[in-house]
Image 1: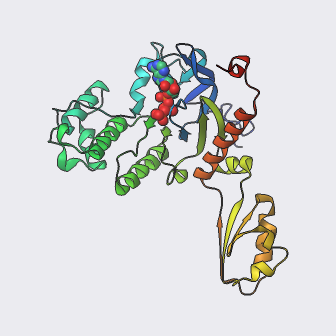
Image 2: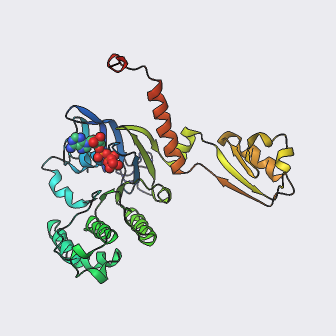
Image 3: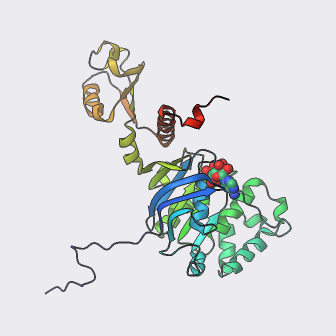
Length: 327
Ligand SMILES: Nc1ncnc2c1ncn2[C@@H]1O[C@H](COP(=O)(O)OP(=O)(O)OP(=O)(O)O)[C@@H](O)[C@H]1O
């Protein structure tokens, strides 16, 4: 007879506590609201892309999670505790942070800088050399940081954030200054950290290339969550058209009464998700069709959509009495 552990019944799936939890978290600076009622649960091993225009509140959100400052309202928990509490001190070793603008002691060498951070984080010095290798800085590790290029400083910043195999990584504009190869290597490191169980919040203005490395995207606009979800969920919410590119039809699309209403170019159609399959079947029935490519809305299009939707809503709102007064 098989025995079922009382701890792991198949009927009661284990509830994994969130690594980061924000509940109705808001932040104001000198009375000016910059984050409003943010709700977020970040699961272990989850990679969240945090996107928003300049001043949307991304760095502020990271500062709340790091425990640099408290929310004005609402609650923030990291590893189950308030990140500003004494209990959170030890947990900080499990957090890696890459600030938006990295700056180091210029007179120290890259290796000395990392050794210094390794001591602060009580991380074994052995891992310093491996990390320098991982970010491609071994050849320059004995040179003063003041001789490093912008991209090299950014790589050193990443090595610093990766120290001690953190369980939570907050990366603010991690690919700024990186060349295409270093960017690719950076995303490989993200994938590896994720597969080792780390949770990551990755904030970026460079949208192409990010989508295959994130589980969910959070789009912030003027301190508010405009959208959050997997790309599939965001596509469903946005209901943007899917682009279908065809080859070989040589003008026959125009003559097809069922298809020509979807045409936006000679070999290009835009269809809604709901119509996609019917249009595809119709296209496949055309003998001259040589090739077909389906392009769903990418992260850039989704970002634009949610931002302009928010702008339209705000333009449609009646203005307050103060705003209506003409000088
Ligand atoms: N210490 C501060 N005092 C007053 N206002 C601040 C302070 N820090 C940030 N702000 C304001 O809060 C808002 C959000 O800033 P934040 O740095 O979080 O934006 P961001 O989304 O990270 O922007 P960016 O993409 O430009 O880095 C901005 O309007 C900014 O001017």
